[in-house]
Length: 132
Length: 280
Image (cartoon, rainbow over all chains, first blue to last red; front, side, top):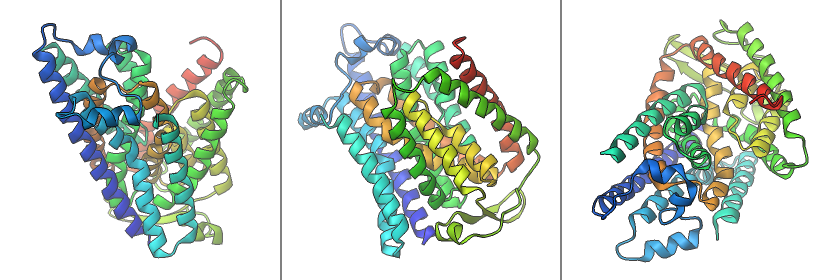
């Protein structure tokens, strides 16, 4: 029972982390490429030393805002990176749901219930704060 | 070039944070936040956002490896996570109600005592397992892993489950109240209170910290504290470092991991006491 859940959760964590990093990297390459072709290239230290400067264009703070940006063709590189960030933030909750499924299939009611409560708390917390 | 050098340096720091996090069961924020703010001039909110991201990245990389190798106990992690998540929710509700400084002094003293207890069992490789209980068996609070350094399977069983849950609740409450990660508390609860092997404690903590951080991640995202330019090298570095770190844990003895962990506890106890007393 435990081995099945552990294998599944392990794979979800690894796949989520890998997908997130791939998206973030693709977005960052796009951000750097477009910054290099601007008249006044921006530099990372200046952007990250002040929230006011950093938030101007690159930071997404809600799911609807990010969804609108991702529907543009081509999507802005910062939106691709933000999608990667979201995938990473959601990965533990998705892994928990995968664990829940494994426990449910194995008939372990206690851990199905515990996983369900924890997953609900994580997902509700996230959408309450970032759902827009 | 400036951008690449800075991003490369952040990436390198994050790799180190990931390795340390995977070995010690921490999120890496303890290393990342000071480095990002002091050496890279990153604003504190962005550094905190990067720290939350690094905790989840550490958890993804390290827990994936530890779960596959059998070092992390998913049931133990989920069972204890019920206490940390409840504690975090209670802590978040108590912001502004409970005197934070008094709590910091209290937890600083608790950490100081834990450092003393850790010092006392510094050379204990495998703690003696308590007698089996129906409750522990029902909830899977026991297990077995293959220890490559010892060359044999190690069976373990959680002791003082109520005490462990209480410390986990306190750790979660502290996370909710102060907005800090609590990987060190989780490791201490499992190692010192529940008498689990150190490597099982750090590996299971790696799984748990991802859940705790994910609970507060939406807050940081919604506030705009996770900057993409900063997030990418941090996440990439930490993920890579933590995956490397999981391989390293298998080759270390429990006593070595505990010796590496002790200075972190002493540092945390000192900084928490000083903050509580208003010195920092």
